[in-house]
Amino acid sequence: MNLLTSNNSRGGKLFKLTVDPTPATTHLSWSSPETYDPSATTYSLLVSLDRLLNEMTYIKAKGGRIIEVVPADEASVSEQNRLDLTAVGAEPRAVELWSSDSVTDLQTIIAATYKQIFGNTYVLESERLTQAESLLTNRSISVREFVRLLAKSDLYKQRFFYCTSNDRFIELNFKHLLGRPPYNQAEIAEHLDRYQTSGYDADIDSYIDSDEYSQAFGETIVPYWRTFNYQVGQSGGAFGRTLRLYRGEAGSDTNLNRTGQLRKIEPRELLVSGRNLIS
Image (tube, rainbow, N blue to C red):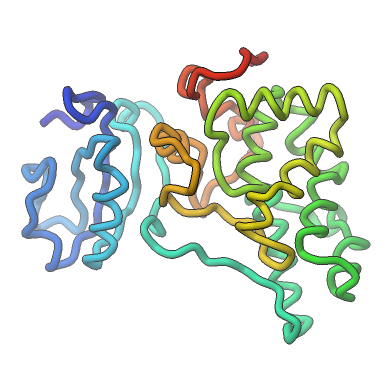
């Protein structure tokens, strides 16, 4: 099977998985067993979208390590499209504030919140929101309120609002605040309408005050990318969009040449519901 064949007749879009196997997994019959070389430390296989989640979960359960996942038709096009998914299949590493936490623990929570909300971009010491940090350190506010202050800050606006299109900004808000991609066009249209009618702060509040946020993170948990397992209410088509939006531990949502601000999810890949948006 050609590794650059992007579609098949049964499963739709194909993804190329690069796997670091273990003896427990190398004897299994993969989608592309001819790509396995016993002398190599890694090998690649093709998996259709409808089998991708089960395949990755099975590999992890057997002790294999998933080095990367990339759409097959993009495998030789650009290194920027590659995804570091070494943690796929593992349980999410939630960072939570406890009443017994020390000052050191609080600094870990603050760092994790900056990393999540600012998309793994570097925040200078002079850019940090020291007043908000002090409120959290003194237990005057919850983690949820600290997230709210970061997302409403001028720094967040400079990084993700002023320099992006409307739909890209909404896409990033879903990623940073809810730990997932937008599921359909209607979700994007809803937030665009809210911003236009009620303003920036009201739209940010709508993510953080949502039932979804409360159920996933509550008052004490730092938002995180909620793995590649299906969530309640998630459509099957959302999984492919999840792979595109997730950039891995080494990736970030901005960089010097601004490619981090390019839209990762094409409107045609969203379920057709809601109105069209400005690109």
